[in-house]
Image (spheres, helix red, strand yellow):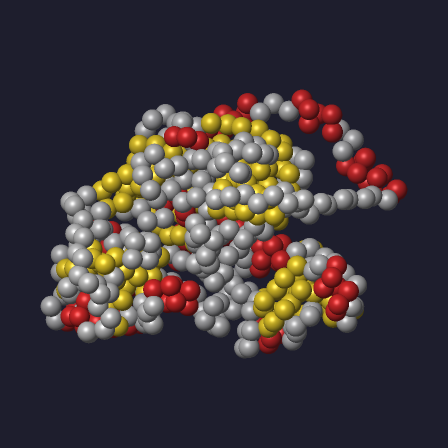
Length: 512
């Protein structure tokens, strides 16, 4: 990729997903992103006095001893290694000898079957880091670290290894939760990422380049960074309708393999999960990004209790306010999130929020950007009531809002029983996937375990038909599952992996 030169510096934007080989390291780095914006802060006399008072003892910061924090964290940060089961029989999508049986005689190309060797064999996929957050073996990592894995193994700093079970994932925040069978394991307690300040010391702990736990030090460079990388594939294409980004930026060295590792404060408390780096080479170049624990804690709690995240939505399209937009719309404030559109029937519309309102407060907490608004709302669940502060016609106002889920209800979303029985989480495919594959319907495998994993079905697989019936919704899957339970107890699955373009078949025996 040729780097363009301009007066503003260009950084490459790329999400590196550890999916290629045993030597792949799970990390995320960013390329092709323009960071040519310069921020200048000014203070008045009263602010200067306040700052001097707050940091009267700042000299102690230069005498900080990191050994306690390092000792508390290195033993709880683990090396995560993944494997993927070789896929079953594969043939070119739309040019397969069984295509007509499943889909009828439509646009079949020249037959060119490419059956894969040794189906069912587990091969190394990649590696990254993880953080033990409880003494009974819950482990947090990045979703992209374990994406597509059929087997997950963690190794502690003392060289003990455990097979890990995938509890659930949240692609919208790039967080995944694992569980290992262990007792009295070392773990890191959650700290409060809200309280960390720009300029504060932090440590990044992980397993870069497949090394054992490594500690690097730096400061918090910025907070609430929105980079637009979560919910996109390696080519920058949108794969998730919703992404929640409010990264902590740090200059602590983060390298390939650090993804899923810990960002801790000087007390040894977890304040973030290391996720991305900004680099021209893929290695450390001074910019690292971590998902704050203000987001992580809620995601982990939901995954433990429900298997899926209970995501509350305002039902608005928002954007940051630029000076140009403010001038055009005669907006006197520059801090907050500008409402571009309101979803019909959504929580915001029902509360009276309108386009061109500027939301700048959630339950008394000031929000200065879209990233901060998303982070604040992400802490709540459907059915929760919050108070929004907003500016309309340059007047500060408040309104109470009852949050909803993506279905427009306040119900708790849980994994269906049939999905639990099969070890799978499903969702309808996005319009982007439909367009890319030239199909009208399908279900995407969000997580794969149990019977699905045993057959080698990987995350990202698109189910097109089961027992010769189209799959347009999770309800369609449930219906064919229930029918199969009453008859031959067999699911004949046909689908495709978007990354390979190969149509793939699986057979699951329900009675076994």
